[in-house]
Image (cartoon, helix red, strand yellow):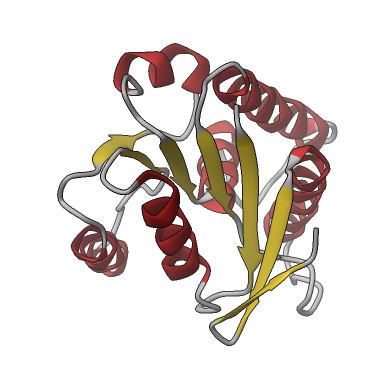
Length: 186
């Protein structure tokens, strides 16, 4: 990969808008947009609709949250940029896929889920590493608020935080978006 850019920040901080502007500047119309959201209710369907309306219709969209090592090559031909939005939805989807009961997490379950999530992150990085593209990933900074009340939320916060650390270590550039203002931190 030519360059790996990580864009992080809180909810409604301008991360996606900034990442899309980077993707447009780097790849113009030759962008593969990876959408990791699963629109499971009306609110999420509305969010997905707004995101679709904000991106150029010429961009190719892949809706997926795992197994990128098997999917990216097939849709990445002649692309200059891959924009993945977002890592934390990817993490959330994997956690919820692995948890049979959201209220009860058996002992050791969290460690197994984290290994599964990290495996998917490794597969993602492997899939983009050898491509001649710019890879932009959007993620949420989950550790700047209060400690979550329930075990599942704490598990999500912990895993997402460690995933973000792995991605930031591997990224060439890292931006933190605050109140719509991107600040380059690496």
